[in-house]
Image 1: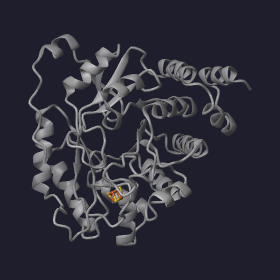
Image 2: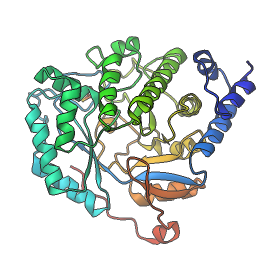
Image 3: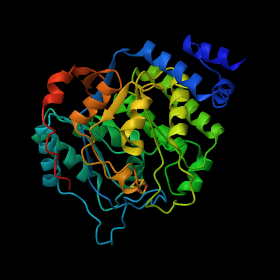
Image 4: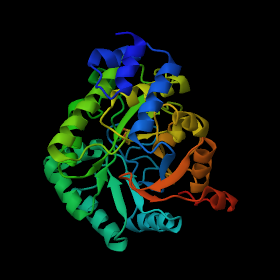
Length: 380
Ligand code: SF4
């Protein structure tokens, strides 16, 4: 099948085979972009680009996994190792409420000093103080850490965490879900099968989940295609069995500036990012929403991503610490005004959504942009 036929097939909604997904990587960027944008227009409101007001809380930086691409973690003996108190976290939630957000994305290291009861108490404490707060927290890596610590299986742990107030599991820790790539980048990192096993358990319980991908470890097109096909298969299974799959797909580029991988992993250019995003839109035919990533490549590339398959500008992420510690685009968060402005400038109508992509409101850009730039939150 020629390149144009392949793209026509994808645009018509027909599923691409493994060989066809791989063949997409050899097609020129403009054609991939046009096809990906066409699919995006078919699957989501063509005029609208959504965004979410939320806050990251990195509850501890103590971690025993020691990924070589991570500049965030500390050993428990390092001077700047920390675990936030419940009160400190409540203060951060109060700040989020002040800017109109009701969702936190809470992640940390795999800290062996924190027992399961600490997590359960934290969730109960936050939900007790903020009943309408939505808590999407803990990556599969942290759940795996709790499995090792407690001897309990993910199904049991997630059920207890859900009872205590957990709403979902962000998809961090996926990177490239091919073990050869993972072993080279971080030997102790959660393996592919465990990442899928824990996500599957979360989906079976009705929890929110996100499909993610990070490029730039030196992986080739075969590994990138395998990652996308693995996510597609999991989504198929989750939708069929639990009617609850990944809410969206998010792609970003590896940041190595302050990490041990500097000079060893190539990272990925904006061109590669946009190309992989467009291919993902064509390959992942069972995920409706695709996020543009401004923290790693900046607002301009994120605006371009809205024409390469993305229909969402991500979230405000007040106080993102993990990607930014490794380099990033020098940006740890965005104000609502900045997000609205970049969506309008790119030619779309901004809409605030919740984590499940339900529209909450359409801010009036005219009125909104006349408002002065809000004072940014003090960052811890
Ligand atoms: S990426 Fe996560 S698991 Fe790896 S060292 Fe950093 S905090 Fe730990």
